[in-house]
Length: 115
Length: 113
Image (cartoon, rainbow over all chains, first blue to last red; front, side):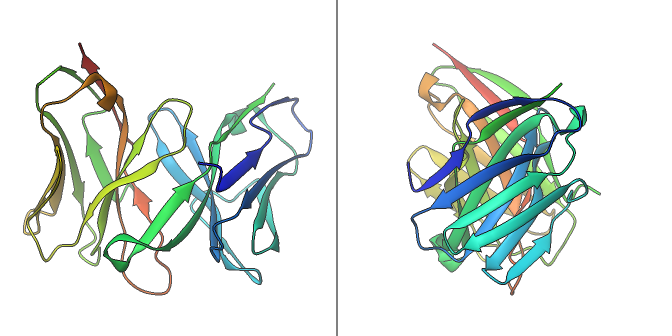
């Protein structure tokens, strides 16, 4: 499903480097999210935005920042990457779907490796 | 603090068997319980969801059973197929302005031919 796209899909970087992960969506949703997935830890929320002027910290925001450039674009930045930020990162959007409750639509993910 | 506890972490089932994944929660304010399915190399996608006003919801071979008094819910996959092999996440949320989903840690299901 190309409604939510993430770039890059894979990235290898070095400790201390600044890196930006980008997310774009064509679903017209106001709500966007960034998650991190680690084996055995599930999906953990980093930041979320309910509209262009709204940015909120999630469960694990330390070491990350975000920018909501437009309704369709939500970027995640690692200001100074460290090895324990090696993970699979997902962007998601949401609307009121099944049962009139928040249904999230995930992008394909970005695999980030910090050496 | 883990708000949604999911078990088992991994599950191996033979083709045609029943796969059962369990989740438990503590927050009684949760009132929406979706399950997401993730295939390798893909993002999670909504599979099925339930509200606590019903005890069971069935969609094809997938059924959610919900026990409000025990604060538990489970996913049953009947006649499991190799194509069901994926990671499954339970989740929960509360109604309101901040409907953030809280995810379980996931269950990797393998269905052998």
